[in-house]
Length: 588
Image (cartoon, rainbow, N blue to C red; front, top):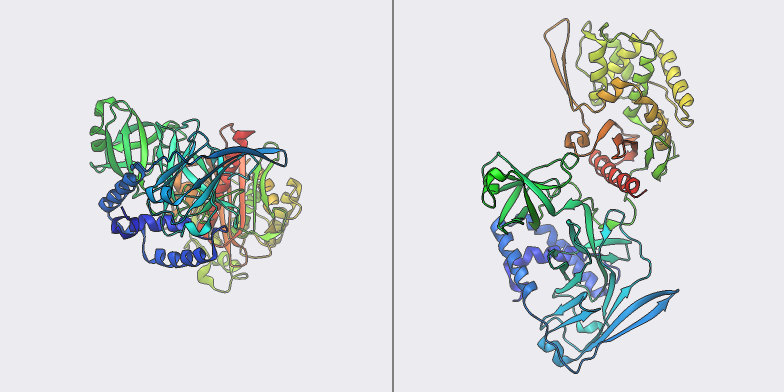
């Protein structure tokens, strides 16, 4: 089968192509072809295919992968040897493929078949030696993945024998099935990252197959620790069709779910998120009731299943936590500053520019609320709103319409409790000024108290000139703010309010109802055990986010990001740092 001439596989082939982009070891001529491929990819997407086309194309890839191409020639003798590099012993496999063998097709089997290269007729055009090295030397590993196979380096020594226009298949075996999703990755030396290849897994046989376009690469099998493919599944009643809820694969993905008891399978489309892994750690997916009934009795309730992705849909979020350049050795954080901090012992799990003083925008508000509580207010107290409260905001922002505010009128009456909840959940600036006025302190006295408090807590590089965060001169460091967070969340109302997704209340003097929505996407997503958060934004500060998470061993981990380019970036990078922190603490 000629892949290049098969329209059903064109999108899948293009996906292979984009995985190969920017590889430092590629030939210059291949780089030009790859750049053109990227341009083509922008105009063509796997997501544009129908489910039927994707499924049909995937089946044809499977046919290619299952075709027997191993034609053994008796006069070809592979050589296996060992060589030392800085006292590390690598293992080397070497074989010369002559023209006759190349024309007939051949499967190179190295290290007792643990690594194979399937070369169908037409892949190579000239005689070439093939070298495969099992690298026992140390290599940087992706922080978010678990390597389950050795690292192999293969090379066609005659570079002109392969023109990189036809993909070929590699097969790698692994020792132990861990029930996690696996892919073959190659190491991109130019970026120092590991990039995934389109992979098909055979868990019963404990090997994977992947398509690749490179005449030289370092490859290995990695599993995603948080992405389950073997476990349990229940059912839910929703759309009454062939649908599934998955906490791992994005909506629109197509999964093959197999009942391990009777081997019945069904292809289903992801249309919902779930089940919650915190509550059900062994649950892979939940099937729609109709789909569940096609592979098991509904009365069974829960069954053991295996999940295989047929098509993984595009998503606005990173694919299994990977960035555009693949799996990085350390978290790829582009925010100006960041920290992962454990409250109980002060351990800094990760930091980037954590001691640099930066504007913190609305993260200021939490300190203002904490300072207000030191005045021992009664939350039932009724406060009268004054227009002057909003006018204080205008000192720092010229474009008044850009200020987040609660739409109150002069003389409106509201309880202190509602005022506090609205100020934190909605991050309103005018209501913070109302709270300052209700404290009984002058504005200058109140701000002075804020500064005294943070210095007492140990935040030596933090300073405020006003209580809302509208002034870019309100500064702190990521490390300071992590220390501050520990003290802030000793207050139960701050703890409760900062994780509320929605708060509704009304005024006392007129019929007006308000619904305030939290802008922290991670709270709405409800995947992690988030027990505190605050967003912030100013042109001068960029996007800021503080998130507080409870770890499995009931410790408290604080993640602070300052100076991100977008709100989405704060969510993506915070999620990456949460995963990094949890993984590191799990390994301690």
